Image (cartoon, rainbow, N blue to C red; front, side, top):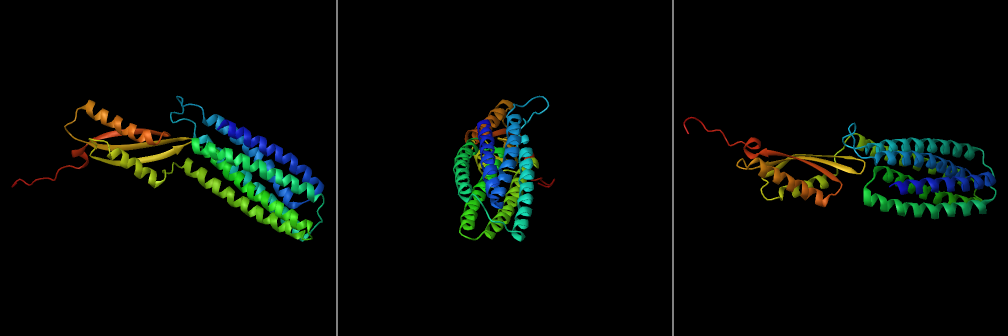
Length: 292
């Protein structure tokens, strides 16, 4: 996860420098869109780097559930940065639409954009691997961020090619379209980060699978009140299992341990807390009348 944040920051800085030179020589609003996005990419990736470093700290006396929600906070920060970039690019695109200007150094812009595409694809492949291995909210948000960059850079390349063939106004249209897409990406990142901060349940199919695993343990008569939430790379799972009234405390404890192991074996990111309930407390026998 730390390596992924360093890679994202290095990519953003490299692309920002290249796009700054290309924009200065060409005046392309699409390249300005790319430059603005890369600068904010760098700020967001730096924030992400700090947040991931903090989130990976182990639990302590003040944070018994760890520091994982720092990732979600970083996601909200990224959404803010991306939203600002969308507004800046959109306004500049509208201005260029009503005040068109000829582009210069189009070849350099195309070359820089191709470099951006290559570096972004390489970064996305690495981030996908990290997300698959860790489930990190912050890296997933960063990956969504750079996926929008991939579309942005493709649009910039198309706009520059059209402008070089005599359609300079298309540069402004593409800049405005890119701004709307960036804003939509920011809203998506904000929704995902907010879900983590608000302790949203894991996907229903995951909860159903955990319920099935718990019920499959011999001796477990039923399961209820299964609750889940996510914090950083960790899942926190709580559930009540219904056990026979005749079991000793030691036997009930052993069954709870087996339930925890059954869930953890399939979901290594889960920290499972199991509470044992006597079956007759959960499902009391029907009351009998005095005449019976």
